[in-house]
Length: 249
Image 1 (cartoon, one colour):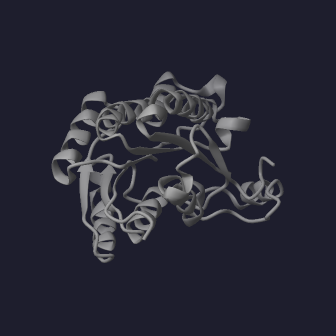
Image 2 (cartoon, rainbow, N blue to C red):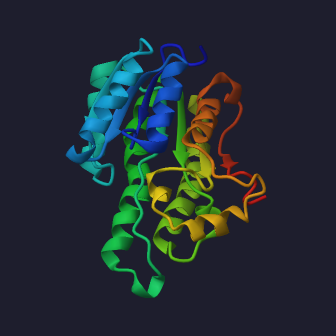
C-alpha cells in the first residue's frame, strides 16, 4: 500500500471527483477526513464514509464551508483532534455559476471565487502550519483546463481555477524546505454531476476537441492525486498535471 497510515483531508469529498479521490486513497491505506459543504450533502458523505470503512480504514466527516476562513480553520483543528495529523490535503471543493460576462451577477462571481479559490487559500493556510511542524506534507489542488485555456461563459470559474495554479507554485516555493510539496491537477471534460445535464449537442461538440474521443472519469483524476500523494512524486512540486484526454495538447 502506497499510503499506509497516512491521513488525508479531502474537501468536497461527498460525491463526484472528491468521493473518487477519497476511495482511491483509502484503498492505498490512508485514513480519510471527508469534508462536505452543508446538510444537503450529509447523506452522501455518510455513504462515502461507509465505503472507506469497508477498506478497513478510518473515516470521519466534517461539515464546513471552505469559503469561510473561520470554518476552514475550525475544520482543520477538528481533523487534527480526531486523527492527530494531516499528511495529505486535497483541495477539491468547487462550484460553478456560469454565465456570459455581460450577464454575470456580482454575487455569482463572488460565490465561485469564494469557494474555488479563496477556499483553497483558507484550507491550505490552516493545514500547512501543521505540515510544517511535522516536516511533511502533500498538497494537491484540483484546477481545470478552463483555468489554462479559458472558456466563454465561465469567467468566474476560469479565473478561480487559473488562480489555483499561481497559488500552487507560490506555496510550493514557500514550503519546499519543510519537505512539503504542492501540485495541481487540471481535469478536462470529466463525467460528473456538473457535466451530466449538458445538452447532447454540447457534449458532441466538446468531444471533437479531445484526441482520445471520450469523456474522462472521476477515477482518472483520483489516479493523478494518488501519484502526487505517493512516494513516486517525492521530487515533484509546483507542477500541473493535465488529465484531459489530450484536450490541451
